[in-house]
Length: 83
Image (cartoon, rainbow, N blue to C red; front, side, top):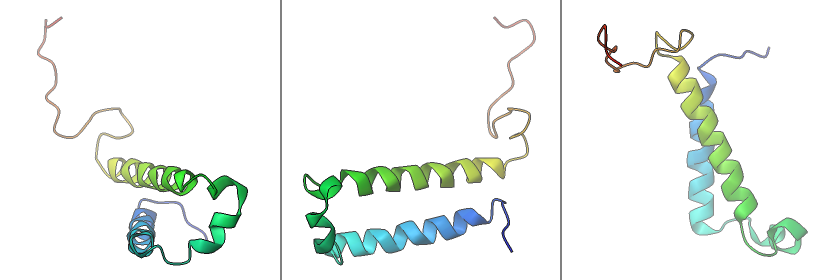
């Protein structure tokens, strides 16, 4: 069964945590060095990590009450008559 809800953010966070541990030790990365996108560095991996963290942030924001209406949690509403 496949579901799309904010609970998936927990899985994404766990994957990023595990990736960070492997990356810190440079585990399993040597085989990628032979491939074209990774010959100059690990930019592709860094970009993918940033994308996943962006998804996590979006899912966490979606847990707020005002997400669908555009209200941000913790923001004060503008006073009447304010420009």
